Length: 380
Image (cartoon, rainbow, N blue to C red; front, side):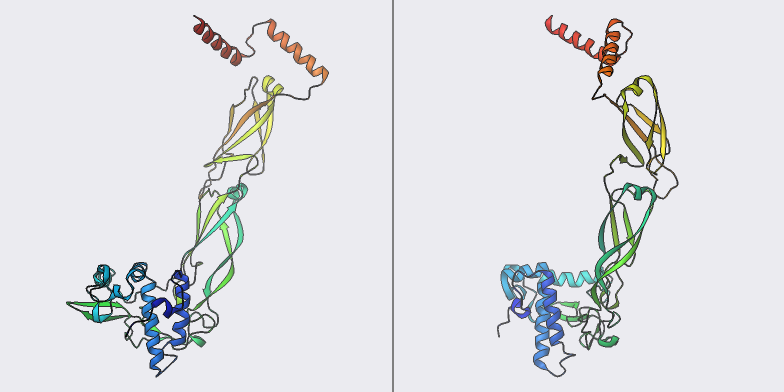
């Protein structure tokens, strides 16, 4: 008798995703499970057929072989070399047998082929420079799988405990002879759990968990940097049927600041300085990342680009009481919107500068001297 198409058995298209396959199988498995249809041979056979179909299609390699060769991929002497050791046991080719034998040996022969451990989750959070400096406490909302309240996470209606799987007698694996080999594989009835639920919970479909949005308190320590990861243990997805939950990992990124730039534990700030202050000397007040102010002495003749170091005024160092430094970079500002009197004074200053050679502008004098030498060399 010809076997039914696996995709048709599960009621999905050939382009179905892994999530679509899982959803379709879960729905049909609940409907035709032998525990829910005692004595119904048709339902029992249907359950076996859809379990076999899902077992093949959920595995990318097996699915690829099935899409190319159909059922022949898992039969004796199947096309493309996929068969050869299949036959009466209904198992895959030699690669499948090798995986079942040596894969099980490598894993220490543990029972069960599936994990009920919840998945880890990632959450991206953006923080300000001030929050990164001082630390902060905030709440986030995360949508994830949480234990089902109707069955207390057991997956059984009314919270009843699962019973030993009648197919594998609680071992989670079954054995079959295939030629010279004795092959052990995951039980198709309980999928390696060793236990089955007679009456699945209607609220969660027997998984023991439901999707829900929950609020979590997050503490951001002082000194965090771009890419810092915060782990909230046990706040990931809930495990299947009471399995251990995963973790939640929060990845931090820093918002750009209007004034400060950060490099590690140091803070950089470009500050405009009036031309007169730069020429005559003086002092300026600058803000610091901790919200305070710092006074910087400006020596006479300060040029644009000169850096002033304020020791211990930078960022907090993560997991330490130390702080980095702050560097103030001067940016000498040329005055604009001059009054008539201001222009007269500058013109007078210019004439005074031209009339005597006291080296008021050593940088420009040195530059143009080099330019003159270059021109002289070109004309020689």
